Length: 142
Image (cartoon, rainbow, N blue to C red; front, side, top):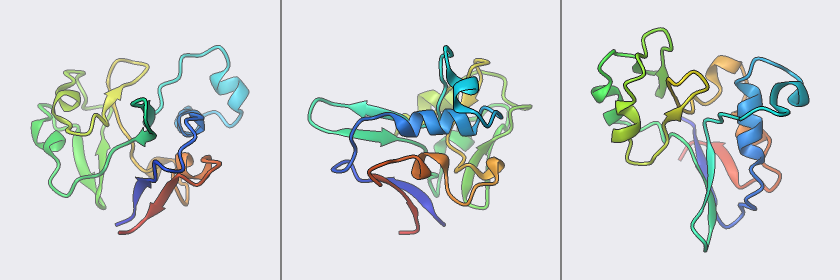
């Protein structure tokens, strides 16, 4: 299964992956209309530990603890990708606590959100990958 991988040597820390992710999941095609003067809620985030910058997103684990800990059954595996059923999520945020990679966050509505590889956006590859100017983020099988 293809997954998102990050080469931190190439990450510029520009945060374009975050903006492209937020846009792709906003339901609006115009970045200015979707994101201007708005707090964004991307499903990927850039971290800077002082030495390197890198993007953090869901690794779509083969044995995901987040799906096992979800009290409402909102998290499930579909075609190898871990997805959230927003109608089932009760906002307990246990998934945030148990994710060993810190890849789950809260959405604009306070419910859990995470990278779903842009599967629901009908994209050939995730928006963060397409929007990375330095090709630090790739979508491939390893």
